Every structure is written in structure tokens, then in C-alpha cells.
Amino acid sequence: MLSLSMIVRDEAAQIEACLRSVQGFADELVVVDTGSTDDTVARAQALGARVEQIPWPGDFAPARNQALQWVSGDWVLVLDADERLRPEAWAPLRALMAQPDVLLINLLRHERGAVQSPYSNVSRLFRRHPAIQWSRAYHAMVDDSVAALLEREPHWRIADCPQPALDHDGYRPELLAQGNKAQRLRAAMEAELERCPSDPYACAKLGSLEVAEGHRERGLALLQQGLEGCPAGAHPERYELLLHLAMAEKPEAAEAFYRQALAVPLAPRLTLAARLNLAALLLERGNTQEAEELCQRATAVAPEIGLGWYNLGLIRRRQGNLAGALEAYREARRLQPEHPETHQNLAVALLLGGDIDGARSSFRQAIKLLAQLGRSDEARRLQQQAGELVKLEA
Image (cartoon, rainbow, N blue to C red):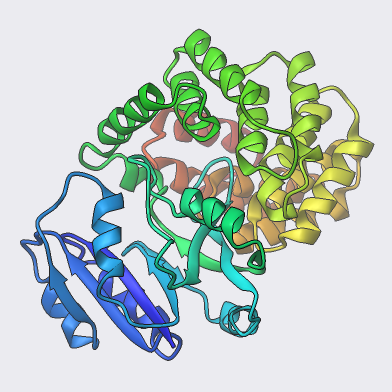
């Protein structure tokens, strides 16, 4: 028996899609509401969920631990309202749950809208065991209790589901910009670092945030601090620390960090950012052969990610392979039709191939998307530049 466990508050806009994604997979739906003022509770109940209500305890770990007291399944799947279970993952997950020595299953989560890393690994499916508990104020997780349990009961093992299992909307830029989520996350990360100054996970998250906000020196110091405290081996935190060090450093040092990140033995989808960023760096240096190899590997392991095809198109065009560039751009356009740069580069390639009407159409679409994204200056520049090449009004 499998139970779904959720913690929610004012999630009326999303909870129905989340619950529908597990109907037929989970045997029990338990939703714990922490003070909704919209109709979250009614919508959850209408879809067959049992709703319990508690006052918000201050952070997610105690709330999730309380929620565990109300589930009765042999296994527990924990989702947030902005996540969806993918139907193609049902069969591989059921096969893993049927194995008697599997304690926890790591799930590949597609981070829709994420600029850098399109996939992450989350430990959200596990046996209902009294020793498994949530901890940490920032990004609550069961990993600490699972590690302690494996020390006492070594017959258990952790499994990885190779198939992407979850879709997540929480990192889309427009959602991150809403409310005070960024400030709350920063406060939680600072508190976690104060409690454990060398924690690799907290150093990776806060260090990358500091770099992104222009505080490069502190960010680099935190990332190096986390790397020193992170053991070698297949640790996602080690990969993330190396990735963000590469992104913050100058090209010479960046290349070395990207290669170290790719040497961390993780599932290939988890290392897409390092692979594609290294390919872009090598393209700038004129090493198109290795850059193409990296992008071909990326599109082979994650053909559903448009950025890999887009980068492959840029590389092939630099190589003079116009037919290959057009093929890659068209696949990128199919996968991410809202990406203006794909339309713009496709337009240039079509123009080089003599397809004036196709180029005109793609230029128009790129200009339209730039305007919709609020990038009006870029839209005007492209309007002028494209107008000198093709008559956009024709």
C-alpha cells in the first residue's frame, strides 16, 4: 500500500493537478493543511483526499513529521502542490517498491523553467519506517535519518529511479519572484550554516545565491568551504559545488571545475548543466569538435531538453554544417517554443539556406517573444537588424 503525504497552504490553484497525477498510483491521499484561506481543503477533499489541519509550526520538517503520523501505507510518497507525478514513472517505481531490500527511492525531478540545471534528485519515496524522519530548516529532507538507519540496519539499500518521475514548477522565474520566498529561503540557509558551518548542501545553496546576487567573494568562499567538507564520490552536493564554482570563475579555472563536476559519478541527467556549459565554453575557444560531442551526449541522455538541441545548433552552424544546425534548431523549437533565441538563430540559418519566407516568420516570432518577455530594447534591435535582411512586413 502506498500513501501520498502533502503539506499545503493556499494551494487551490495547483492542488488538483497534483492529486490527479497520483490517482490510480497512490492508495491513500493525506493532505495536511497549515492554515489555508482559499478553497484548498475543499478541492483536496473533492478528489478523495483526507485532510488534516495543524497550525504552521515554523518550518517544514516538524510539519512533515506530523503528517507522517497520519499515513498508513507501507510506502510514503511526499509531494508539494507544485509537483506532478509523471505517468511513465509508475511502472519503474512499482518495480523498485516490490524489491524487499529497498528502503528509499531517489526520484529524478524535472525543474521546469530552471535556467541552469533542468533535473534534480529528491528523496521523496520511502518505506514507512519509525526511524525515518524529516530534518533541516532549509529544504527539509529525510536523508540524515536514512543514513543513520543504514548504519544500524545495513541490509537496506537506496535505489535510484532512472526515469524522470516528477515535474516541478517551483523554480520558474515568475513564481520565484512572487511574495517573499527568496528572503525566507535566504534566512533559512543562513540559519542552517550557523548551525553547521561546513555543511556542503547549505554552502552550495547559499554560495550560489551570493554569486548570483553579485556578492562574488563571499559566494566563492562558501562554495570552497563546502567543497572542503564534502567527501569524494557520488555526492550531488559535490557536483553542485563544483558547478557553481565553475560558473563563478574565469574561463581557465571554469573549465577545470566543469571537468571535475562531470567526473562525479551521477545520473547523466543530473550533470546536464556542467556538460552544456562546458560545451559553450569550448565553443567560445574554437574547440567545436569536443563541444559537439558534449552536446550530442546531452541530447542522447535527455532528448526532451531543448537547450541541448539549441546549443548543438549553434555548434553545427559554427562548423558550417547548416543542415545539421537546422535539424537541431527545429527540435529545440519544438521542445521550447517560447525561447526567442531559438527562433532568432533558426531564422539566420534559414536565411543562409535561402528560405526567405521561413526566415521572415522565425524573425517575427523571435521579436514577438522578446516583447512578451519585457525585453523591448532587444526586440527593437532585432526588428531593425532583421528588417535590413528581409522585409518583415511582406
